[in-house]
Image 1 (tube, one colour):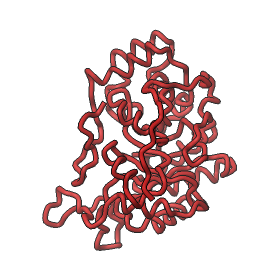
Image 2 (cartoon, rainbow, N blue to C red):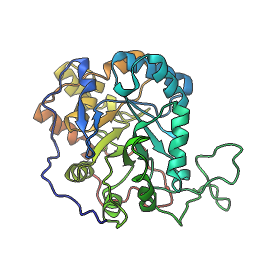
Image 3 (cartoon, one colour):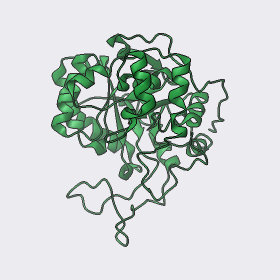
Image 4 (cartoon, rainbow, N blue to C red):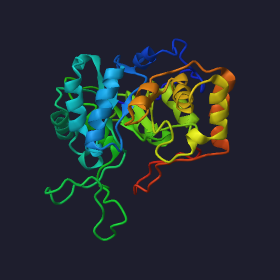
Amino acid sequence: MHISILKRTAGLLTWINSCTTTPDSCTETVKLNDGNEIPYVALGCWKSSPEDTYNAVLTAIKSGYKHIDTAHVYQNEESVGKAIKDSGVPREELFITTKLWCTNHRDPLTALNGSLKRLGLDYVDLFLVHWPVPLKKPTSDADEQFFVMRKDDPTKFDNDFDWDFVKTWELVQKLPISKCKSVGVSNMSVTNLKTLLNAPSTTKVPACNQVEMHPYLPQHALLEFCQENGIQVQAYSPLGSTGSPLLKDETILELSKELGISPATLVISWAVNRKVVVLPKSVTPSRIESNLSIVQLPDDVMEKISLIYKTHPQRLLCRDWGVPVFNDEIET
C-alpha cells in the first residue's frame, strides 16, 4: 500500500499553551499518529554505565518522570528494567522506549524479544529503528559486536548492502502490538523519510523520528516535514551533549538570566515549546530533577534561540556510516 505524503499546515515555531513551570509538566503528553500518548520529557540513557543508569532511572521515576529512553546498543537495558521494577511504580504508568540496532535489521522480532528479556518487560511503548543503516552480523557470537567493521578496511563499517531501511521498516511495521505499542525511526533525514513514506511496502507512517536536535542544530525543515506528516519528533542531545559549548553560549546565558531560569531549563523549554519530545540525559540527581521544569517562552525568545545556528551551526554526531544518512541538501 502506497502512502502519499500528507499535507497539513504546520508552523516552525509552535508551542504548548498548557506548559507550566511546575514539575507536573514532565507528565504532559502528546498524541502519536497511532493514538498512543508519549510524555514530552524523558530521561535519556545514552553513554550511561549500567550502575549510573540504574541510579539515574530510579531517581528519575521517583522524581516524576514517566518516560525512559534506552537502546540495545547502550548496553544498559538490564539496569533500566531493574530500576523500573525497584521503583514500585506500576508498569502501565511508564513509557519505555528502546531501539533496533543496525546488525539486527533483518530480524527485528528476535531483536525486540531480546530487548524485552533484558528489560524484564512484556512490552515496550516505543520501538525505534536506531539508524537507517543495516550492518552485517558479526561472524562470531562469542562477544556481541555492535560496530562491525570491514575486514579489508577496518576503518569502515561492514554494511549490508543487500538490505535497506525500507525492507527493515516492512518488517518493523508488522511487529505485534502486544510487544511494542508504537514503532518509529531514528536519525532519519527528510530525504530518507520521503523514500520510506513513498515505498510500496510502507503501510504505516512512523510514529516518531528521534534525531539530534538542539539550538546549534534546530533542523527546522525536518521538524516541519515531520509535523506535516504526523511524525512526532524526539530530540536527543537536546543540551548539546557532553562537552558542547551550548550551555555556555552567550545568547543562551543572556536569555536565561533575563528570564531567571537556568540555561538547561531554557533549552529544554525551547524544544518542548516547538512540540518536540525532549530526551535530556543526566546521572546527577539535582539535574535530573531540574530538567523536569518547562516554561512558556515568549515569541521573541523562541526566535532568538531558533536563529543561533546561523552563527554556531554544529552537528555532534556526524560519522560516515557508508550509506546516505545526513543527506538533505540544506540542514536548517
